[in-house]
Image (cartoon, rainbow, N blue to C red; front, side, top):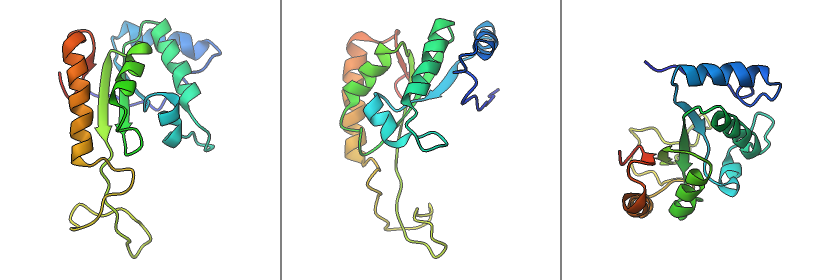
Length: 166
């Protein structure tokens, strides 16, 4: 069973009411909370903006600090794109440094095609459409994963859990 909550301002609420009760609920019910965070601040803030268009890294980190404070298990859900794909070890070591034991990496793979209605992304059935600049090509994705795997297998098996490897 999967539950999805948009707790954008709630888990990070520092009035202590939300912090105390919501995090207590997560802990007592053994929830694994998914956190969208795309690595260190320079990578995350490049594309993760809040509703006002401002960088969101600091707020996400406050939420992570509260989850860690209350002993709530959480999972990093990180997007790998053409900007950050060349830094797999920086990504991985960052997640370890902030207490993340469960990590998911998802590559951006978007093809572009000018459509009559103004949209720019290609449909799955469209052929011969180039990848967007933010997309990760197969060679980049392979290098990213192999570099991660080599580090993970040497020292971290059983301690850190990367969805694609476990």
